[in-house]
Amino acid sequence: QVQLVETGGGLVQAGGSLRLSCAASGRTFSNYAMGWFRQAPGKEREFVAAISPRGLTPSYADSVKGRFTISRDNAKNTLYLQMNSLKPEDTALYYCARGARTFSPPHSSQHEYTYWGQGTQVTVSS
Figure 1 (cartoon, rainbow, N blue to C red):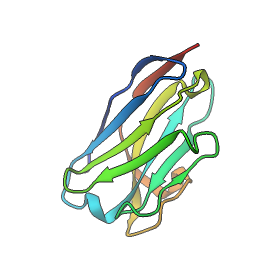
Figure 2: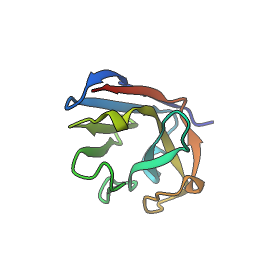
Figure 3: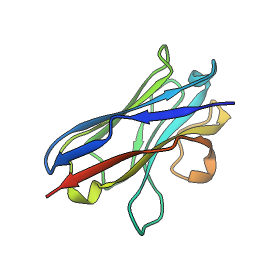
Figure 4: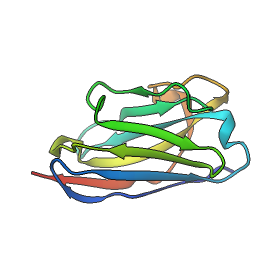
């Protein structure tokens, strides 16, 4: 059973930065694409960023492109999301997720992910 644990959320002022981490259990972390999603109150969960198994092909939602950077350290079984120039509209519960198939490219669809963490709250004040 795969477990994903997100950390690093918190309260930050607009324009500030946060770095989220997602620690994964298991020995096959490096075989799967990983993604970050978020859900704001009253809204559906949406795609934020995703990265290929080897970390070579990141993809981003238009709303975060140029401000957020996804990365991974396969030796540490850890996924990261560096968030800069944060805006109040970035306020949400942030989830990491593991891809459904080995060696697949990063996807923006939630249906391409099978394991999810419990989320970490990010709140950006204006």
